[in-house]
Length: 480
Ligand code: FAD
Image (cartoon, rainbow, N blue to C red; front, side, top):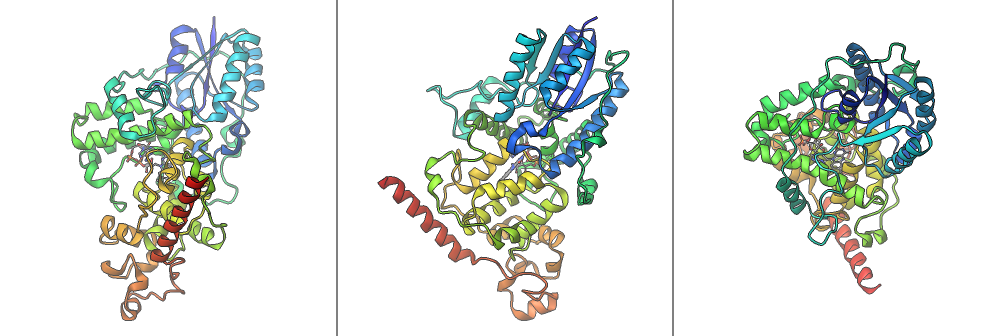
């Protein structure tokens, strides 16, 4: 009887899981395994919010696998030793997994595949569960990686989005006596100081949670996605990003759900699918430019005169900048581990442009606080907003958080929800309380500098200083 180890990583689902399907198709027994080895992810080991998610997601996966007859075996790293011992204990003939694309993990997995095949003499096969296309599958006419989104996405669309799904197995032929493993709780993923109440209230990690959310989105919000996606007060986007990151749902399943709803050819459906395209683009860029989590894609930005981070960074992190839309976003992030995309762009613009604090500082904070923290998408998002990445917003396009608030949160509902100390202000002053007449502030019970901070930065002056710094950088680059 041949056994295959299915090595789960960030593909924590049974549906449309090609490694699992491979095991069922080619072997008699399946041994599902998770190896906890965060140190192998180097400086990008999961942050606090991700660890919380992973804990619950592993619990859900372990329950699903046990119910199907093949309990999950959890072991501590290093991965090579853990898999080697499991091969010894079970005599398994194969290790099968789905690919990840972070540079440190590509390197580890390549070495591991070689070791499994050459030194252990077992079958080692990897599959694509996380992306619609592999990052190396498309190239420009010159054979180069794409650096502009629209032609990249057109190239993927021309290939036809994949929509064949691997069915969810009902039963799994597990081992009669599976090896012992650790319990999820022993991995120490939950925070010691329990700051996670907001996450508990907001999310249902695991495959069932992902499917519920997808069903809800397709039925209730997708048909109005184009109009609703920019309003942070509304539940107008899919909210699928953390499940997609952990692989509790895959992008092919999302495409199929959109197609089955008959919405793939509507403007809302196309717009939504293009957002999945940005996720693909992010992975394409990270694969071809593996230095970008730390360095700008546009090399001239290496010389940009960033300010030393100090009290302003702390105020930004705490949602106490005195700029309501920014504070609302940062507090939403701290409470729920998630922030609306438009607000992510606004808070990132304030940090990198008005405050001229290095985008890496922001990316680090997001890394620790986002439940969807994803190296490819986070790097793209930060470099795009800072103006130093692929297809980036030009540096001179600096988001004005007051205008953004007036346009996308016109009645201030989002600000009122997350910055309740401003809730009594009338709509026309909620995004710029420092401009409100004293009697309006008094009537709303707001004392600036006491109940709510004065703005930590003058938006107009700091915008000009950022533009000047950018011009100097360009001039120096031309002269160099
Ligand atoms: P929807 O609008 O429903 O979109 C569907 C899916 O498409 C998302 O779940 C996501 O997987 C993908 N997607 C949408 N927009 C983008 C985008 N701009 N880039 C890449 N993928 C996208 N996204 C992450 O998943 N992880 C991150 O760490 C992350 N960091 C970001 C940092 C900054 C500074 C910015 C500006 C954006 C970042 N994003 C990140 C992208 C985007 O904000 C989120 O993917 C989106 O808000 C998730 O919400 P949703 O699932 O409701 O998106």
